[in-house]
Image (tube, one colour):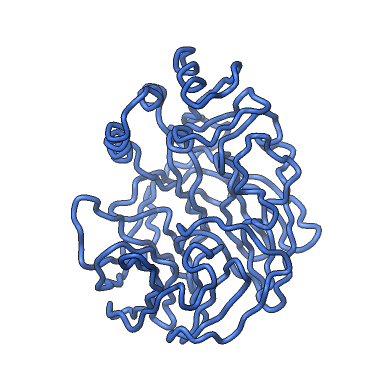
Length: 396
């Protein structure tokens, strides 16, 4: 980034002098040995069309009970809504009526549990309700977590293994801290026991991670995404294009690592600053980041934001009015859509594409099926939303 742009950043956000910001372009790198020539795409196999208009966030779906669970913003309050695969809303009730802190108190997406109940992991612990909103059970935290905001969606957060849930460790402020003095020794994941409320934090940054190399990083640049396959946990730490593989039992050893070769991926490296704050607006918006990872049909599905090229990064750094910035943000979202990479078990890039009309971040594997939400149309307000069951199509 040009020196005058660095000066603009420092002036605008009162950063200390000497701050250096680097956006690295990790282009397509030819590896030694054979390289796959396959391509990949998604095939829509089935869909669920739910009749609803207004602002909403899908939290979960269950192909067995044929139900969809989502949160809706109704006037000044949020509601929990239960719908069927026939597209009809079956019941709804205000979130503040059953959750201690309402929607804002959720620490993970709501989860459908069986045919007629769902669970909520919130600021007070685990709670299970039937679909009329009646509390069935409640288990308090051993250590209360920190609020992470009401933006959880069905592709994020907790994954179940046996009787426990794997989740981001929120109990010690590890992920929400805004100071750039990154705690390299923090535990990034946690096992949660919904029956006892006990938690077990584990997994630190590996020695080879970019987050072990010093420097400062912007807020949530290291926030992990993960998936569980058999006896292994596959984790990507935020902006770092690398899959770390851990065992699911103590001492949770690091088994192996898989570098992700993403075409045109550009991510923030580190700032040469010891005490400055990097929680300002631009960097989280322009840096590449891994948004979701799932395992399906022997391949890894990786949703990622590619990051801006240098020219657009510079344009974003210029002083602009709020209206100009909003307009530019919309344009950049069109120019840099979220992409999907398909990686085989050896780390070979099988395909890299923009899923048509699908939101890659919403990926959810349930009952062996891969589901995704239809991408929202910002220009047209619909009176319904759709979820698609998709298959993976590979071709030479």
